[in-house]
Image (cartoon, rainbow, N blue to C red):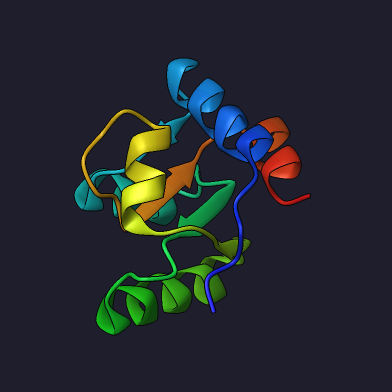
Length: 100
């Protein structure tokens, strides 16, 4: 069951994107996770199982909070991109607000 995503939450995601605090390209995401710069991982609820497994394993290993919210289309629209399966937030402040 897809969770409803509030306009406020999507607005905050867009703000973090404009502030340059989000990554959404697979290679950049993994680099930020491995270098411990990631404060939060956001996964689309409709991301591929393999993608989810990969990010959950990394999140567990590097002790990074992970959130499944919205669809690839919704996440992509919120950050002004095409369909996006995974987003990494680099900022602790935005991370805390996005997890509320």
